[in-house]
Length: 139
Image 1 (tube, rainbow, N blue to C red):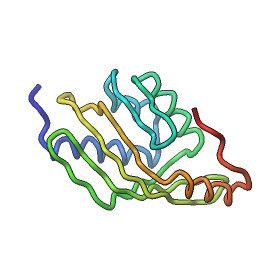
Image 2 (tube, helix red, strand yellow):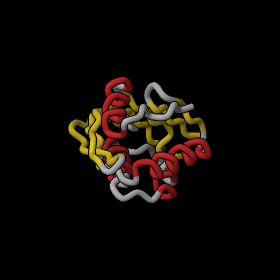
Image 3 (cartoon, rainbow, N blue to C red):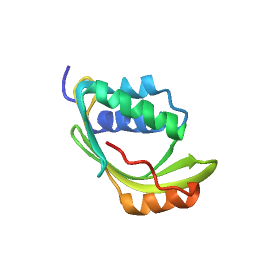
């Protein structure tokens, strides 16, 4: 299959992010190649589809749905970069976090690399204010 155009790569990423609103973890995981890498900001690196599957299932269980408001998006070939505001619900209360993301999409339309960048300290403070307890440590 020929390389994806920037607009095709962008469509893959937009579909993936939109899928978080009412998430089916298996469909979300199906967006990744078998050898994909997901770097979750300062928390962890998940290497391979099996590790990404475990992390996505854990996130869906914890947050149930995330509305991703893409505020900026640029694409160059198979690379798509986003600036977004992710809206979560935790302990029955809503909160939002600003995220920058970088995706690489292969010629099969699968995500091979997803990197997220955000301020962990400010998010931890907000979660603690909502729940009364600090967020659990992540591997």
